[in-house]
Length: 559
Image (cartoon, rainbow, N blue to C red):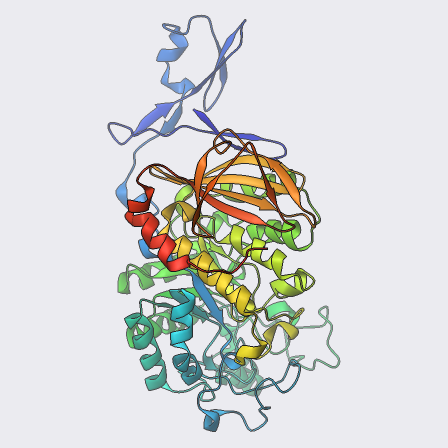
């Protein structure tokens, strides 16, 4: 066994082995100078002799792994591990067809967004900027809902089968998906199966016909008349279940057979018609798990390599055993990164412990596809959280993009867009080059290219070499390739004592594309960093090295 990592309260040890006959019994022997104990499933047994103690022959003293059935092995889609996502809020990304804009739409970016603002973003706007996304280096787009709804966010669906006409039509979305796939970009849509919108025909029928409505059992209704006036509502008086106590988003009864079949057909429809690659499941933790098991079976039957992502902000063990989701949104990691780099509320040691906790919470095959993010339509933007300091934003993305999982960039964060909580985090994408932070954009392009061309960056094999005050050194290893990352997260210059793996070594700087001879220390400016690979004779002939150096070569500084 080897010590895998440590947190504030625990050390975690790992032993990997392959059972010869697909089954195994095992136990742990803990020994000191004076005694030895056998720790098994049911009891702790003292051992008098480690070689032939009778307790070692009693199977009841061991843990039992009965049989490794192939169908029980959790295997998420392989392509997800190598995907860098880009989240698009369609109403705010680009207006490619102004004739589709709602009549109340404002001129693009002409005002600070409010809860009910419209600016005319649409699907054609996304098609028009696929070159931009391809150049950024992303290979997955996550869309918030596209379905017919009265709001700008579309989480209050009227009809799950209809594209909102202000976004476009079936042919436009098919064209978008086809063009994205041609460029190697996957498409993930947002499924809102926890609730419907109040303007949906099903809910309107309930309002009109009460208990006589054929949709009465589609929802959770306590009594009539329905209280649906926000002006007089408090959650104690609401007499039907809804999302976040909102009168406008009544909760669906996913135990109802008609609801189940309706939603399953929604899932199948968008896969069949548009060949989407993934579903992101909104408010997934409030929908019953029996439904999600059915959903997984049906969707994987139609498209085995479909990625199923659940929105769960807390511990998600119950959903990640191979029968429901492939992954969830990795908010615990986001919280740790933000607390260390953005809020500066924890030190490096605490940060290390929190990151380790996030990783040891799930198996490696789950961690490899966890959806890692820093900001989204639900949270303030990363630049806002960093109080406008883009160097802290750079460090945050460096750490995110050097971890296992499938990272996501919220539209505009790569060019320095800022904004607090909703709706301020949903501003129009800035397409005026003079107003974009081009230095930050080049930084993001470098990191994405480095991640895509250096498998060690996304590997789950990580060793912490230093976590002191505001300084981090960690290594990432894939097969025989190891990358070292050094971070100074403080507001002042820092001289760092290097670990033996780096001290006095010749290294290749993967970010600045040059060879560096290290001493026993290195000095980094405030919020500075370095990304090194050990340099050996012949490195310049390495295909991997040449590819990485070519795509990230740039004269930009990293300070």
